[in-house]
Image (cartoon, rainbow, N blue to C red; front, side, top):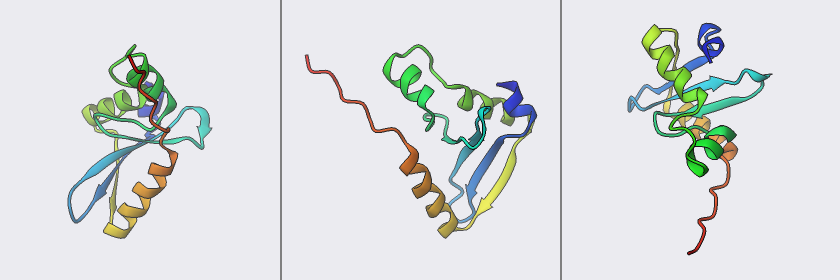
Amino acid sequence: MTDIVDSRKVSVMRDVVTGQFFFSVRGQNHGDSDVYTCSFHHCSCPAFHKQVTQSKQSIYCKHQLAARIAISLNKLKIEELQQNQWKEMLNKQAKQMPVPFKQKNG
């Protein structure tokens, strides 16, 4: 996880109009091709879906932790986005989100 922070793979994507932001974190296991969208409460990575949402083994995934550490160490890239860029980025990331799991009846 510290490799993610040390190699500055954590970016803050910020909407210049509204001030809203999310973290973009490049993964370390499969090269730089995996980019996950994170907030303090969610991440688009498969581990978040499995370990945090379904099995509740963790309260954060490593991408969320890397974002928090990067904030503390001031090792973030900050990208200011215009509103149209912001919408495009969110739409792109929404397509990569895992399908919500079905709740068990009973």
